[in-house]
Each structure stands twice: as structure tokens, then as C-alpha cells.
Image (tube, rainbow, N blue to C red; front, top):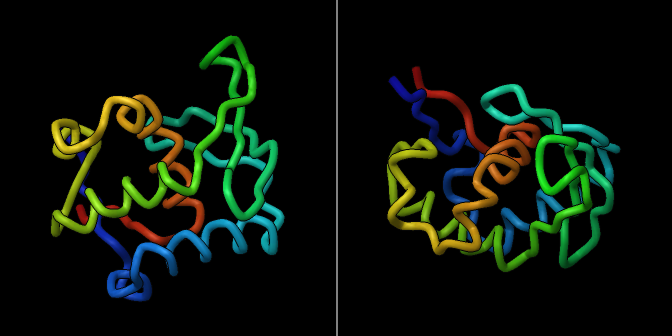
Amino acid sequence: MKNDYTFTNEYIHKNLEELWAIISIGLREKNILEISSIRGVNYKIEEVNNIVVSYSTPSRSSGKKEDLTKTDFLNFFKVLKSHSTFNTASIKLDLPTEIYAKRSPLFAVLLAMAIIKQTN
């Protein structure tokens, strides 16, 4: 059975742009250098700026740096906000292909920033 997630009370009413700002500024201010996925995959944060969060992990793309763009996050937030609870399986059909492939590191960032939490 998949674990379900929801937005934390602090962030549930934030708009998409506010959520992006929390991530892009928060990752830098908190100096978060590594995050973990819900399945325990560790991602190294390579770069964070106003338009992208770059990460790498040996288990994806031969360890090459990959980007999560601001647009990726905004589209991901839009899908998540359309559900009261969600998990990687429940949102599968709602995600564009290019974002679906990035859902694990996207979830990892949101968990690291305490924007989402497990419901059960």
C-alpha cells in the first residue's frame, strides 16, 4: 500500500509562486545539500537559484546533474493542490510526462522543506 501525503498546515493555503519562493530561497538559506526520496534515494543538491534546483544521484542519468525548473515545480504544485491527499501513484495520470519522470526528486524536495507530510 502506498503512503499518502498532504500539504502541511503552514503551506496548504500558499499559492504556487509562494511555494516556489519558499523552496528556492529556503534550500539556499538552510544550506540543504542532500535530500532523500520516499524510497531512500539520496539526491545531492548541486545548485539552487531563482529558476532551477539542480540535483544528482548515482542511480539516475549516470550521476549527471539534472534540473528541476521553476515551471516543473509550479506544474507539480498545481497537480498536488487538485488532490486532498496524494502519492506518486495517485497523481501519475495528472502529470505531464516530463514531470512524471522527476516526481521522486520533486517529492524529496517538498519533504525536505516540510511542505508536505505523510498522512498515515
